[in-house]
Image (cartoon, rainbow, N blue to C red):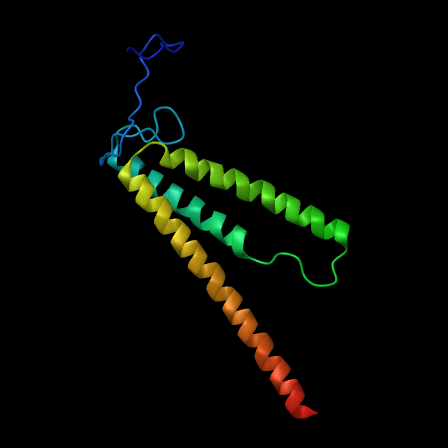
Length: 137
């Protein structure tokens, strides 16, 4: 069965199984345009989008004592950007290119590591401060 024709009268082709190679369409028609350099740029782009998505998903963004209205607006705006980035990563992975898939998974993993290591560092700092405060008393 033929794919429907687009406005440019060229048949639209879409890969429907995982494949490896620079011949991909990632997010935009004609990008990365079968160029190795642009394919590597697409890999880094998806990688950075995935990192940003994970960092926004795992960082506490509202400090204690913030007003509920201000805190809600901050969280809603961060949710807006996080969801948009997550959908862009998902659409990129739907190109079924193995390199893009690996870049997305690696980006999510590194972003999770960065966010959680920061959270552990903050928790350790708070524990040290609270234990030193109890020793002074």
